[in-house]
Length: 114
Image (cartoon, rainbow, N blue to C red):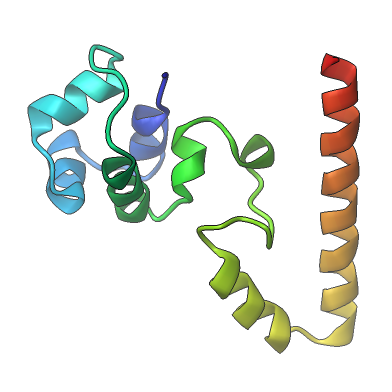
């Protein structure tokens, strides 16, 4: 399993040591995960790293609809509901269109792969 920890850590301009502290793991182990020397970390650790990076943990696995989180994202589901309820009607309509198009693109992409 290739994790995208380093990519997101560098985007957030975090040091390895800082992220390891926030995710409650050792620098050495995190470095090994980033460099694919260690494989298959516990899901709990992936969640901690995602939380420390303030991203959906699924992104660390290279998933989440090409890195576009949607209201279906298990990690951000509650936040989406809260934000969606505060949107004015034009914003809700735009968001619903984006979600529909994202689903259609995902479907087309899966069909293309098969």
